[in-house]
Image (tube, rainbow, N blue to C red; front, side, top):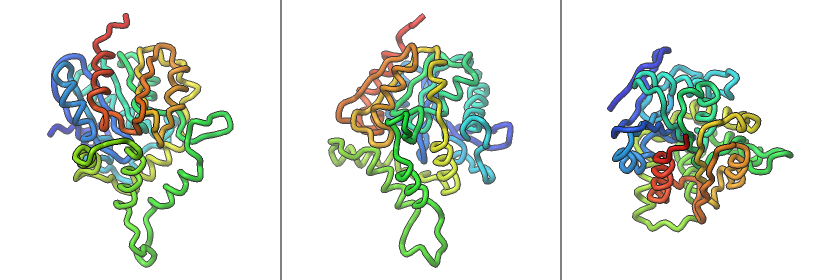
Length: 289
């Protein structure tokens, strides 16, 4: 079980398998690297596959509060720095960076800061802005986000009345990630075991801080600056990052390919791994130069 120590002294966990062109996978909000099991198992036959537990998530060390910086990277710049240090520690000079949901901000900001490192980008169920505004209708309403934030805040013992942080976040993730998809019970049970594993969930401090960063970040104006081949995979019935967000990104990123999976929700790499893995393999194997 490999770990590496960041320059600010935190032990971060990652998974690594296979040989060949490297691809680094970054998980979404409140999750950890185990969600990429189907991709690690399949893609490692042809590529070097790495999946990291972001600081404060999975088996990675929980840094002293607050775990995230408040710099210009929308609060995600600590994650970007960690990924850079991971790549350097593995002596990886050029790689594909793939991110799910919240990680769309992280991988994009990595590219904006270290474009020379990136060969290709893959956005899975991503968005350039989580909240909707007058000029952007593909996000979530602020009231929904604030309700979620309120439900995740610690409650004094005298006022709990049976409310449980872990149960609430599990219910939220489970319903919205895979709701309305036709999945048989055995497959659903397997997916839930990957999502809600022994390292789920992160602490409420980490979850609230990353949610706060997610609500504030906006990379719409920078999408045109992405100059590497980019794959965008999105489910047509995604209730977290609406499919319109995927279409928006595809229009703004010059060298991009959009794949919309009909009848699929927010976690296509879990619910439709064969299709997603094929799209990723074909994309990685294509020489765009």
